[in-house]
Length: 179
Image 1 (cartoon, rainbow, N blue to C red):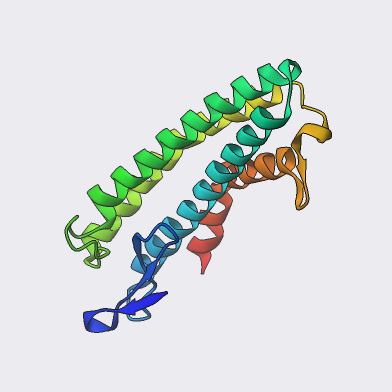
Image 2: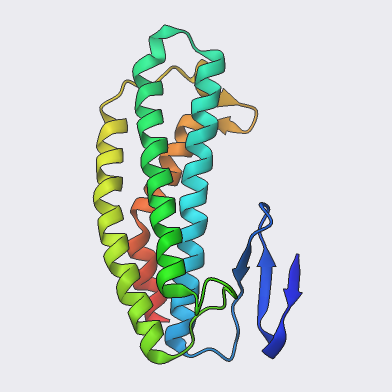
């Protein structure tokens, strides 16, 4: 659902009824880059969180004690992803929005560059955590597909792919920066 606000800036409503800034064609190229990076990162981070949460719930309901190590690793992963999401939220309120009360994206060049620099620092720190997550999950014996497969596919693979997409976000930034 989209709502048009003043100055022809659009806002979209997420499924959780929170707003996020939609792209405005009158933005500078750097502001457009900031907008794309923020929204893509939120999407990838949410996808990783949701897939890990679903996989953990599935394992806890289906599995026996043989997958306890995998469940423990997923729980740790879930906690790390929640921390990353909170740090991303904090970055948005500190750098991305003009103010927390109106939640309008910054447009002034100096604020956009500050937000991009802050995002770069945050994402570099997140990359270290994602590397730890990747190693943690790689060290765990994969549960049998019987415990992880649903009608739409294998949630173990879905979660791994979502974490890989989030881990490879720098490639998206480089591609987005070239356009």
